[in-house]
Length: 382
Image (cartoon, rainbow, N blue to C red; front, side):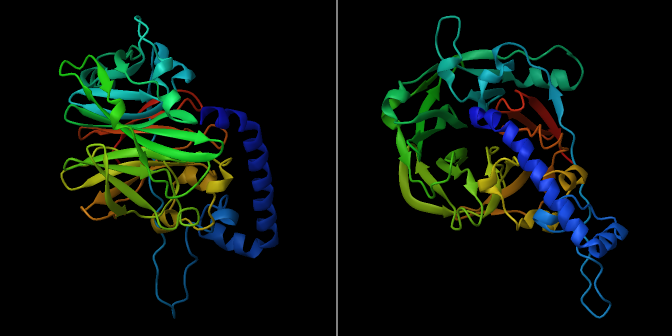
């Protein structure tokens, strides 16, 4: 993913320039509509592509539909990092809590070696994070490395492209793997254990299980994992209505694929991770979109129409937000909770949030996959 994003940055600039021209032409052709919208103080930048973020005031003879309230965007508080994780080569793919340890998954653990030459994952303690957020420590955060013992998956999986998601069920650990074999995308689930003293993770090579591909979409496989009542549920990355009209989640018992598909909801753009499920069956997923990802573009985006767009989301094409979903044992659906929209930088510095976890009742922890750089962020609840 990192290579695709970096090499496409120049194309992104050109694309945004062309889009800006289209918007300018649309505004010039329909100046009367623009003047009306300006009178209502509705942002115009995205109107030509996505439609207005609000509807003009209806006639008194028509039913009165309230304008969406402009939602507050949340500013990400970044936490400085030190050590190999601070390099863009770390390519973070996911994170999950194991007790009070935040285990961070790089896409290629085999590139992140310990002093003894073993592949490893990154680990932060909860106290380490809380001390920084509370101001008790102002130094960059340095994770420890936990050795990661795994089979040579690149030899077993044609087109191996590394790990994408991680989740824990007690001391059991589950991960998804993505592969692109000559243009054909495939996904896998693998399981293992974390030792009771939390000093090693070991995968079971016999547990490697293919996940059925519900759609062949460029660079898309299974980016998120859920653990619910001993069941493992895999979530697909691309669930937009046009690309994947009938999305679903797949259920596993241990590492054995069950015969039950779970109905999923259409969500535009890229779903890149999931938090743990709470006692109500609720969880959050990060949703991101870069302007260069033209195959994910949509002219109909229901969440923005329903909940409105924050100031920067009205000004840029980039999308960085989190949505709350609920698993009821039969299906996964969106809740009516207001999405969390992040304050954007701009279209040339879109942040590829690939990892998400909840930090107690304070907010979210999130990490990017090396673009525009490796970033560790805290996102307080609205």
